[in-house]
Length: 153
Image (cartoon, rainbow, N blue to C red):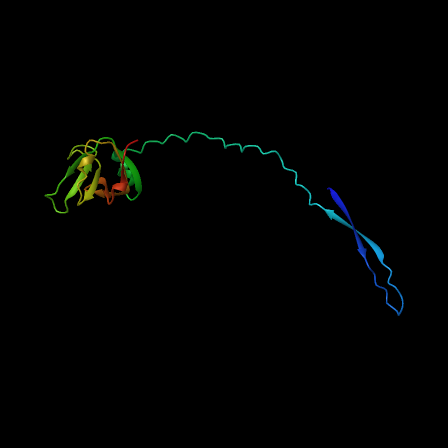
């Protein structure tokens, strides 16, 4: 801590009580003022932050086959159809699209979409997410949105 002393001299005229005929006598007053500067904080050396150890993310396991969802009825799952066999049927009530895991009638799983043509998925490998139900003894997922289907990675 550094101190800075500053001496200031003031000439002050002290006026004693004046009586008739007296002459005031000047007095000299010296005032010393000490000013203390705030401490300068010690600045630690700035080191660049150490980046966190980055490990590669674990590999994403492929979704189970949609053919194996028979035991998952009543659950929301993501499963894979390695080759989708999709058929849009606008001539049938509700205009469904059926995407099967094998050609009809040999399929063991069906992705059903009402009122939309999703036949562009035909021949693709797709991952399907949804609630598994059983229809005529086979598992199926009824998709309500394209967000439930993604191309396989």
